Image (cartoon, one colour):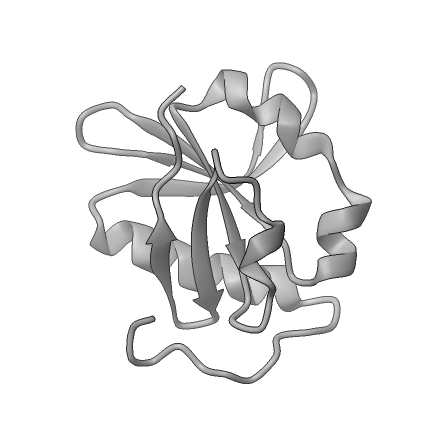
Length: 121
């Protein structure tokens, strides 16, 4: 975990928006240009699509709570549109729930820490 990420819970209707802000800041520092709510060819929307300097594409799926994660399985359809798939969650989220083949970020409104890289597809 990096300094600056708070231990306070992010909740309420704006939780995903606040996490997206921090994730986009972190991706920018890593050299990625990111777009939020990006429409995909299959009709779904990626929470964040990021393009790297070498042309690699990442999709980041934001999950603000365990209930949010369990209620939504549409992320399985994102893999065909990205080189790597990541989940971004708040600090208190149990990381054991995130599939091993997916990358993992812990985020708040001000930044994100990359805990695990996603497997390249």
